[in-house]
Structure formats: structure tokens, C-alpha cells
Length: 222
Length: 222
DNA sequence: CGCGGGCGTCGGGAAGCCGTCAAGAACGGC
DNA sequence: GCCGTTCTTGACGGCTTCCCGACGCCCGCG
Image (cartoon, rainbow over all chains, first blue to last red; front, side):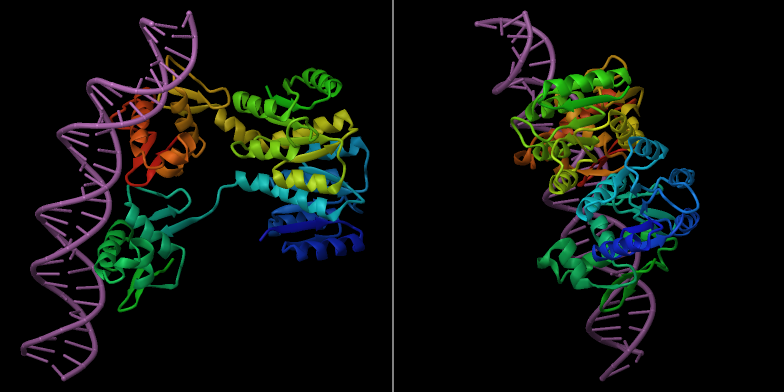
């Protein structure tokens, strides 16, 4: 869920944006002035800031500077000031895009998508999972430390890690990793679970993360 | 030096932009139509593309798709089409910004700075990648030292280097370099990985950068 | 106490995968 | 048409991975 901080001092604009953004399943926070905006941004770390330049307390460009001092969050300026000089100042201060009022709401959405897409690529996924002494990244299929996993081990591990805390049935594990013809071969599971525990658990004899539920299946506990 | 590819079919616009950009110390390449643009982009890997939508051969949106198929280069659309629908289409196709003619040249520069600033770090990382005793620049396809790589070797190397630390599946490498029909020929991979290691690794017998993950694929570790 | 089912562990054998050498086939420049 | 580079294809040894059977343990049950 993308969280957006809307900064504007006109209540009707604030209201219209909040409704429209919420309808598109964005999570919206609002700030009526620059001070509130900076405070809210620091507290909630939004994924995007929609900023009006004409605020009662601070100048919009100063708000941009205030944000850029510590965060790279995308800033989309949305304002009535249409002079090129204003645009240049705001963009050079660190804004990512600049839209003048009145604006087409669909165009605004498209620009929001454009800037978030750009930033999304740059930020790496934080899909790191801690297991025992090791950190596992499912995206890159990498593990910290001197450990290597075989393809089958990855297959098993991935299913368990994607269902944290949940019980995964033997049947499900077997069909996903070995195919539906090997549903009976629970032996494979014991074999490879042992392997995973040996490689990942701190004390393989007393597993803390890969728990077996006798007769049913296995469970990954973070 | 930031290199910009300007795509427009009006000679006077092309000329004006070239002069103004050159005055700001940008390196400029120009393309009068979509086909030329795609070819030039593939050859020279510009740092930014300035794109007019009304081209004689292809539709501008198709040019964007063509570029986005293989590169994340920032695309700034610069066109006479001012309808919101056009803007939305272009932005959703992958453009980073959209400016309508007539435009203020200083505002254009500010927007160029804005999009390149956002991408800056990412592109520079691709400029100098250290592998063994060699430094590789993906943008210019050049290597330090007395080494030469064949086209296929570059293709393989580029995919791996663009995914540092990530595991790249054999399937993906084969389809990207050799095409969909050669997905089974894992032999090619072994052949060319050996070649890359021989040319780039300090000790080809014990590779430090091009790691093979048995049964899965290969991984480049910086 | 004996028994059986489910589980964890160990080790061997077979299959598949990987790296390497080598040579033929296609391609491009002259 | 010739030559050098690049790409494809084949063969082989070594190693990893997977499969499979054997055994011991724990626990509930008769």
C-alpha cells in the first residue's frame, strides 16, 4: 500500500484529494501547513509527498529543502503558481514533478504512478528473513554466511518462509516441490527438512524455526 | 557528461534543442524517427531520452515501450499533444515526465535535472564495475586492460552485472541472450561462462565473481 | 511389555549437472 | 574466394544433487 502525505492549506482541495486518492487505494495523511508536513513526514515516512507551494507558515521550497535534508521520498509539487521561475526553483530544490492547478485528476494519478515507479525500482526489496544465525533473501536467493542450498532445499524453504507461522501440510509441500505424483513420499520431506535444519538452525537437534507437526506438516516460526 | 538522445521530426526543434543543450554541456545525439531512436539508444546507451510523440514512422508510445523493454533510461516526453489522455498513456507506458510545446527552455532544463538526479546514482553504478583486475563500463561497453569480449559475451556479462548479487536463472540468461528457442541448451552457458571467467577472473579455476549455483543459474558478486 | 507408526539420521549408488578441451560450422572483412 | 573471429556442437572426467533403503528413537496403544 502506497502511503501519501498531502500538504495543502485549502480544505476543499485537501478533501477532494483525500477522497480521490483513497478511492484508488492509496493511504492518505494530510497536513495543512509546512510545519505539520515536516513533522508528519518524519513520523510516518510516507511513500510520496503531494505538496502545495502556497502554505501559511513556510514557503513550499523550504519544505522541500527540509524534506530533502534527510529523505529521498518522491515529492510531487501541486500548486497554483505557474511561472517557470517557480517551477525551476521547486524542481532544483529537489521536487520530482510539478503540476499546476487546475489539474486533471487522472493526469495527476499517472504522474504519481510515474514517480513511484521510478523510485520503486531503485529501492531494494526488504525481503530479508532471519533464521538462526543466517539472513535469507528470497529475491536474490542468497544467504548470509558460508551456506549453500540446493534447488530442492530452496523450493522447500521458499514455501515455508512465504507462510510464516502457518502450518503447511505435507501434501502441499510434496506437490509443490516434487509434483503431484510424489504425494506419498513423506520420506523426501524428512530428508530435506533435516538438511535445512542442519544448515540453518542453531541447534539442528532442537529446531527453533522449522517445527514439525506430527502427522500434519511443518511450520516456519520467525 | 550527460548524454541525451533527442527524438523529433521537426528540424528546427531539433536544431534549437541541440544548440541549447550543447550550451549547457550536454552531449547530444539526435534521431528524426522512432526506428532511428531505438537503434541509436541501443547502440549508445544515452543517459536521457527527449522524445516527441508525433513521429513519422512509429507512435511515440510504442517507442517508449520499445525502450522500456530493455532499459530504464529516463524518458522525458516533449510534444505538442496536450490532452490528458495522451499524457496518461505516455506516463503509464514508462515515461518519466511530460512537457507540452511550447515550453520554457529553462523549465525543460530543470525537469531534465530532476529526472537525471533521481536516476543519477543508479547509472553511475553501472559505469564502473570492478571485476577482478578489470573495470567495466556498461554504458560505453568498454573494459580496462588488454581484453576483448565478443557480442555474446557482452550479452551474458551485461545481464549478470545489471543484477549484482542476484541469482539469475539459466532460463532467463538463455532466453535473453540466445532467444526463447534455446532454453534447453545449457551447454552454451557453460561454454561462455568459462570464457568470461577466463578473461575476467583473477583465478578462473576458483571464480570469485561469477558464481555458479548448481541446478539454478549464475550469480555475479561485486 | 511388545508392537507399530511417524520421525530423524546415516550412507551408498545412480543420475544429472558442471567445467574443460577440442573441432567443425557460420559469419564477416578484405 | 580466403582467412580470422565467433558461434555451435560433441565428448569426457569430476563433482553435486537426488533418490532410496536401513536403522534407531520416541510415543501411544493394546
